[in-house]
Length: 135
Image (cartoon, rainbow, N blue to C red; front, side, top):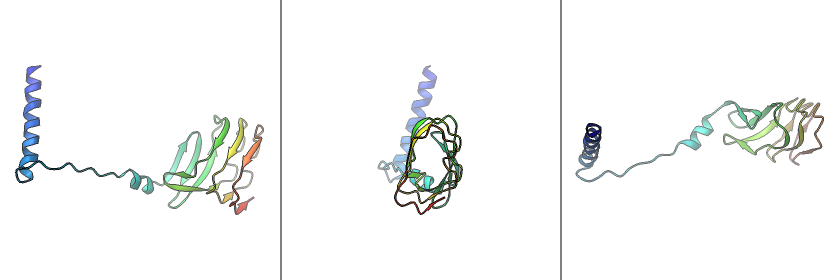
């Protein structure tokens, strides 16, 4: 056990000494760079969020499908991976028989054909005013 502690102390001193010497005999200031937001914007492809499949495109998101396990009330977010959800694909919620309410965000501009087909428990769909295409 003493050997491990000794080796750890020697490595720590070597690291500190290197940082001390690299900056002209004063300690270097640590630098932190955050990339999370940029990585989110670079992502494209399909993603599953709370049982709902989305296709993340370069400048918008398409809601593709709802898994059968989704139940009750669903609130679709305004954005996924930093991009607005603008399209609900045709048959997106088809046969999601346990859904009772779906609330779409203001960012949605298009709802595809039969998007809510066979949603036998569905009592309410909140559709934003800005929908341009509602087939």
